[in-house]
Length: 216
Image (cartoon, rainbow, N blue to C red):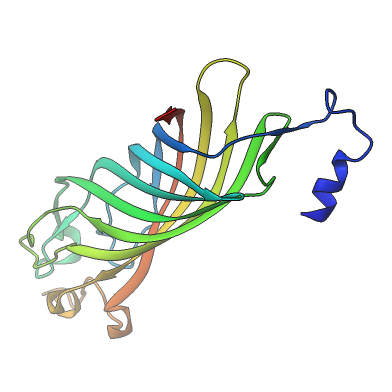
């Protein structure tokens, strides 16, 4: 950061690439793509489009607190563990993943823009759920603790709303029922290693949208 800020030396204020910015309260409306990481049992939702709302409030210096909601309608594989491998997948029902997290965003350029850009790092914790009951194979996603981390880039034009891009990695833990380890008639099972009874996976999500100031 000192090396970055040193770039201001030698510039007249009118020609400096840095401009002061005030972090107040903002609401971002965004859309993008949620790329799901495959889990050992292959029952995770498929990658899909996603929509997001994000609320930020400055708390001093380059730091802001945020709360974010992401929803992604998709589908997943429905397994019947007692069936042989060739007939184990019995459908692809629709599923909607809901993610809610909150955390801290830290602007890398301090309380300034650089060529009207504000790059930042962020991380938080939250929950993820699909609000679905257990399926015919006894698998249930449930409501899980999650954590997130990523990068953001904001562009502040001379006129109009701020443009925001978020790259976020969400992580949560899958847990599997006993049926997934029982061998079917062809001596195969969904999972063979009981050490895979739970597994940390998640999604890599990119969203793009506009940021609107609140209460100004």
